[in-house]
Image 1 (tube, rainbow, N blue to C red):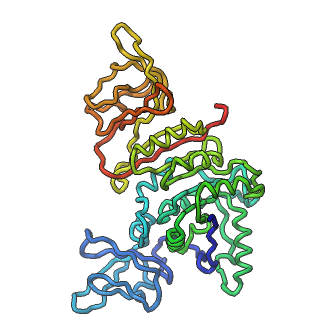
Image 2: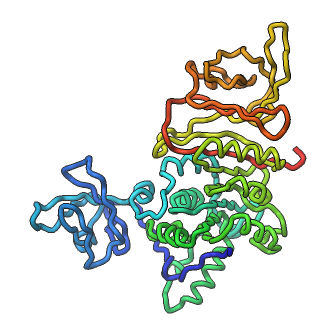
Image 3: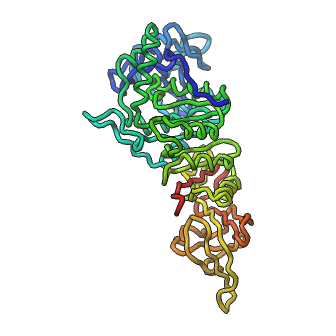
Length: 431
């Protein structure tokens, strides 16, 4: 069953977050990062929202929230003296990457480095509302991003931060959010949402995960990024089908593509590619996250076999805790064409979308474990062919006769763990 999450408005109230300054005093509802004054190697501690009368327990004793309230960044507080000697902690504002790593989780989140890489791959450039102009830029210019697989809400927050400046500020009566006027508040909030220039649609199959992710999003800096996001529960294909069938959804015509970009992190990703592509605008990015390279290959084969209007732009590898920064892989289809010279060298023509042209087998040095199909013209062989055999390399047969799939790392050091991102681009149906 597909539904949109609508929590009581009092749970998603937004208070303008004051920027870091010497005069910025910690107030009720703030999360605070505690760092040990003496042991700089100790892991930082994240408090729950500050509440008068509450305390935060550490292994050296509790810290009273009352001792933190009213203080400023880099002030020092001490644990309550007990059997152990009191310990001192310095107060810090919570950065987004720290908040994502330290908040309670039900599922493994995308690490901050990986989330930042995904945002960079989308190359977002949202424009702020124009002074004196209309509040909304219209359906043609609206930036709408789909995230399938909300999970912990880590990527959701990073995406919302990236598009936040495109939306008009919340009116003051929505910011105050009086519980005595909840109906009026909901009406005003719905009216404001209709003027948004950028929206994050995030979908999760598990209601428990979605509810937890909403709490995570609302908890960061008093929910300053929460209203850019629409949470949904259900199947991504069902949601897209329903959205495309709606004639007045966000003022779009029935069946008109409305997604600027999409990100899929869910089981059976290949089963949803065709549906997501229907809702994706031309040249929009569809990024899929898969734990293994073989799943990326399955997505690529599904696109080719189903003639889905997507081009594989690139494949990048993620390292442990995002440590790789995105190592690029060579994933493409090639068609051997037989002998091409008296020397018996084979010429292959690429049938894929990464690179192009013809190459002669044997022209580029090959390691013992190489795939037997060399890089194409127009690609720098110094950057695509390592001096030693790649750590992983394979060729597989695909459905079309005579085609082989090449799959191997382009450059980089050995990486253990992580996952893979496949970046597809929507192409025109006639191209």
